Image (spheres, helix red, strand yellow):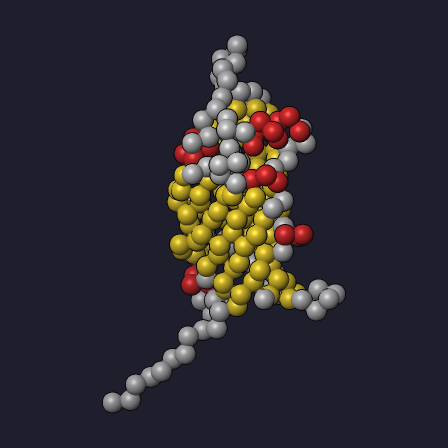
Length: 185
């Protein structure tokens, strides 16, 4: 009886390019408008299975100290023990556990999101990756966008203040948006 030997598909390794990657968040403030902020300290690796993207994996991290909302006092408060407690929990991480097509030409990437000492399963809706393209220096790059909504309370980020008019100063739902470029390793 002849046995068929099928070689595993080659995995392409992509390193996140922090100079061309950005993480942004927004949260309701005073129940009337959104406040936005961003992180610039991104790193990560995408292990792409080009034959079967559902077998691809991604690992990423964000340096909490790189938070910026355009207001240094607010940034300091967000880094404090009231919120992120960046001294005790300096990094937010994500490690995928499954990748599934979402019917919109992208993927739903599920994984373990760790933030503020808590780990929760989270789904990111991914648009991309783009087709590979060469940059002027000979590197091959791909890009993607990813979004998710988290409850900050799920991660122990409970600080808030009551408003005189009712309601709370900071909303619970946080929208996360990532714009990421990867360079072929």
